[in-house]
Length: 421
Length: 128
Image (tube, rainbow over all chains, first blue to last red):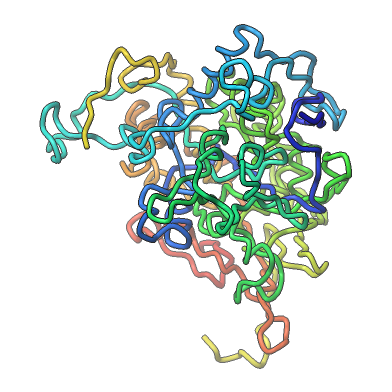
């Protein structure tokens, strides 16, 4: 196996292929604090890509209730268990979060799915993984928020559902799509080399003509975001709505647009972009790109299960109310700092948070024009100061997409549309 | 196909209570109230969000804390974050080759006529 640098782990790791990085990388930030599991993203994806026969069980975008929900069921528990079994007691981080972009979260000293593969599986396996059962795939969100029938009564909801026992516990909603990883496990595992990562935007796709449905990718992806389709006998996965990202959607006006699941988010908790990459796989300095700012400057957004080793490009602002041990297992050592910064956001972070879902077009740069202080208030004993800053978002072509501010600007309707209401 | 949860399955966390103190519920209620106050929700709209059983997280907190405490949290958050409304000037897409400005294409996020008086889109989401 080749040696590649995984900046999320802060070290070199083994990977079946030499490192190769795209010019820009598809990446996204989800703010879990805002997600109310309305499933608008899930249905937007379903109605766009997976509405056909044979795709009934496929949810490229899904929202699951953590800690006890999952699609497929127990996906994260099962791979964490396998890793722990392969390397018992040693799946640990050392060091501390720092400003070093090659190891911003310290160093992961445990085994990744690429390094633990020879401990539990045959030598021929390239990645440690497992194949979920049909039962685990076919019931997303089962037992989560919805009541089921009375014990022993089939196909009938309990007529007194509100009286069902309810567990008083913490939980949160985890929205997921394919992470379009920098070191994709699906790509590493495919014996046909049918999976590829596009050099222009890092989107990971399955070549449907090359795939023979061996399901090695399904077995290998630790996030379980490649899925097998029985009636075509090939595997499929999230395509990152690439026509929109390419600016080829008729609505896009030729400019890159965010995916369907992002655009549909009513909680305004999703932002997607294309970040610049260095030759060594780290993110190139791009100070006023909102994703770069949230991941590398404010450090409020963290990768999902970085210890798997695939360098996922989905980042999450962790939920503030959840026990820290659980969050550290899920998002790595940066959790405490991220939650502290997010709970009491500074002026710039507040401004950047205003960029979420104001437009469907991809933001490549933002600019803040500082305005006067509007008011001060107190929240839970801490002082909050609000400014009337104007936040301006720019697209790929350098043109302004939108601007947001607190006081309403005067708008003079052009003569052409004077009576168009 | 229906299959009863197997209590001996270590992965089957359904039915297993994970420890959570009252503070976790209160913190969750604060977060939802803060986030949606920042998005421009009014006191009435926020209370509607908490009272609506469809939103399991917020509604669970509402039932655990009661209306009085939920309202107290909402008031604190609206006071801190909800005093200002954000307006958006969207430059939209090119129409006939001419840049066209569309003001505030995002109407008030909750479309519940009982919850709050409807605001005019042209007014930047502000109530009159």
